[in-house]
Image: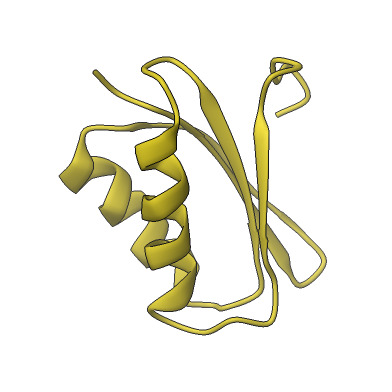
Amino acid sequence: MSDQADSTTLLDVRGLICPLPVLKAKKVMKSLKSGMRLRVEATDPLAAVDIPHFCQEDGHLLVGQETDGDVQVFLIEKGA
C-alpha cells in the first residue's frame, strides 16, 4: 500500500475495540470527498471483518489491507 496519495487521511484507532474502529472510520469518511482516501490503523482483531464489511455496505473501495505486527492497516477510498 505504498502507492497512497499525499492527501490520504490517517485514522489511528489502535487500542480501541469493536465497534469503535468502524464508527470512527465512518465519521471521518463523511467528511471526505469522493475519491479521497483514509488509512485506518487498528489492533482490534475484529477490524479484519468489520472494516471490509463497512466498505461494502457504504459503497467505499477497500484499496488495500495488510498486517504490520499486531497492527492491521486498511486503505479505503471514498465512494460516490
